[in-house]
Length: 143
Image 1 (spheres, rainbow, N blue to C red):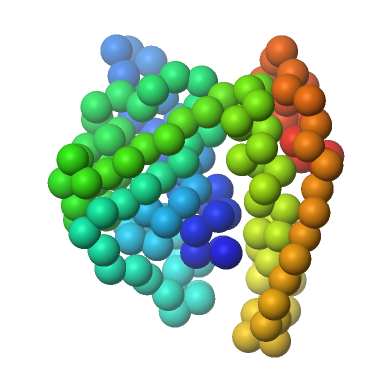
Image 2: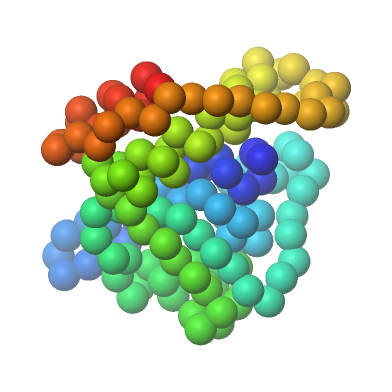
């Protein structure tokens, strides 16, 4: 869960003079993310394909796709990137679905021994999509 669902891969590139910054979640993190979390967990994946979910309101620029593919050691053809704005229904579902991950992340940050957790289940209400990013973040994080 922490090795995949957690939106912990912070990605930034310049695109046409503007900064494109997103958070990534999904199995590609366990392949290519430089997060120290993977060293702490003693966990990495090996695969010839990768998938990453971005909290974004526009498609990632080619430079970001190439960066992720290189970090994951896969070709861009073997990389699937899904993106959804936080204010959309898909974005809302994607964020609310990570509620168990949030609990595990908090446990890890508090230095609770994760090997003591053998199973988990969580539920969260699905808030309605919001017209603005700020309202959407409030609704999804409060859920």
